[in-house]
Length: 307
Image 1: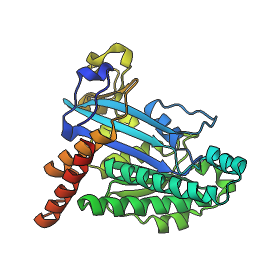
Image 2 (image 1 turned 180 degrees about the vertical axis):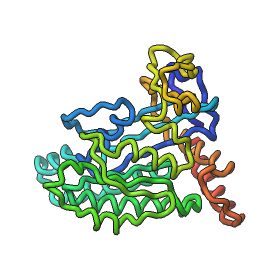
Image 3 (image 1 turned 135 degrees about the horizontal axis):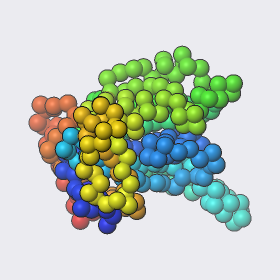
Image 4 (image 1 turned 90 degrees about the vertical axis):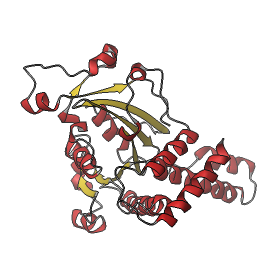
């Protein structure tokens, strides 16, 4: 089930089949939060604040249909500096290796949960950081492997963004190499972006929603922005003569909901079970009933653990 927050959107409910989760992944300091901020507000903050995990919810009304997009802005694979400091202070031999093993196990579980609960993905690396490029390759493989194992999805909708292309003088990842690593396949697109210069950000989201077979009007430039302070009724499209013809015809508008709460892991698993049973609208039809039965048994076992 999708968790509803006590915000203005609580009066507007999107049907389950119109609820999607976007997960943004990548190494630290590659610009994940900047891209999300450009998508939600159009603004860019040049200062850097490490992200632990940010959750955002945006409600759309497009051609009479209500859609809900939950955005999970992840932290990247940050180490735990406090743990390293503790190992130095205590002087316990091999203590840091034990803790690193535990933290790696936790990180693996968290990444697995992101992969399972996400419907669409953006993987971000920085063109001036080769390590972040290698991490992006690993993340893409992890998502595809996890989705294929969990529910047989062979083509997961995603976009790989080589961010900070405004820093071309400091480039460590050649464009040709990146294109070769992220070969354009069905439902997966690669492009370079600059959140700072607002270059290709809108194109990024248009490609993402097209890959996911979602309305293109969910892209930042193709819907009317509505303030949450005006309440849910603001999502009713108005026929404003000043709007572009395309916007008048699509009657698309969207509202970022304040104080939206991140659904619990239990809610994520319930939602996953419903999507698996119902069959996600983005997945290919799988005629292998034995595989379906296996998936359902695994999900039921997981649900027993959290109920």
